[in-house]
Image 1 (cartoon, helix red, strand yellow):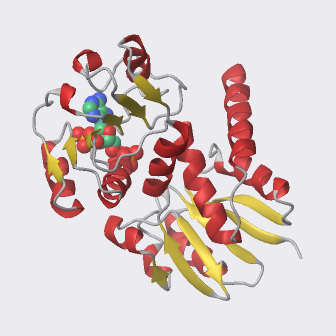
Image 2 (cartoon, helix red, strand yellow):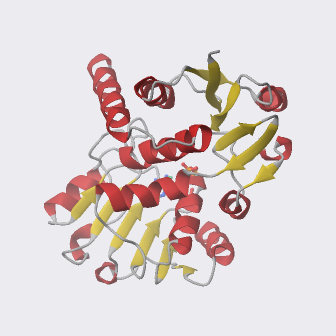
Image 3 (cartoon, protein in one colour):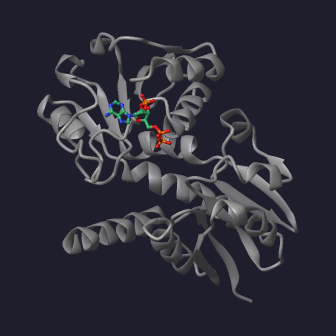
Length: 279
Ligand code: ATR
């Protein structure tokens, strides 16, 4: 029997998840159809409840429903409780489990694609929105020495630092960048379509030479932040690895087997270059 999985969001037409999850299931020899489920807010409950059916593996959840699905789930993983957001739902014999693989996907991307271990390091996170939240909680869990959060709206950084644990703190002004092993841009500054494509979330010229600069934006592949980092001689990591690894961890939650990350990367990169051609 063909089983079903999909992504719940609104809109989801441009999501890359169907592209790389489909090749992952195919490559693993699993008979699973992965669909894009555009779900307006009033349909979230019925969409989630439908996942209890025997043919459903589960779902990914994206903007704007990562909080909204929670009341309809039976059990939540630790990190998803602390973050207050779910991006992966797993159907186990009619019971629905919610996980958050965004933060862990970010940590996997650091380790596997940048050979960087956050444990014991000092990290600066720029931004305090939903994406920053998952990343900050996962960094704290990974045992960083400190995670400093800087945001345009200082109160949001204060709120996030207050709940993320003792190693997290908000920094009001832009701090001395030379003290960080890893600097992460989680803001939308530099993202295609925002009008800020030529801006960088901070001036990286004063960062220490071995610093890893990470941007979670993946369109364009090299943001102004990453280009400046490269020009300053820093190490860089783009946003696609985090996207792929959050999907890879979701795949493993559903199937119990490791995800074929290489084919997932290849499919996502091909799709992004196809979209650039037709843009
Ligand atoms: P996401 O869930 O993708 O993180 P979000 O919750 O809207 O999205 O957060 C966007 C982040 O980018 C916020 O930290 C936002 O700063 P504010 O909290 O001050 O709004 C940040 N951001 C967006 N545009 C920005 C800009 N032009 N300059 C600085 N920060 C910006």
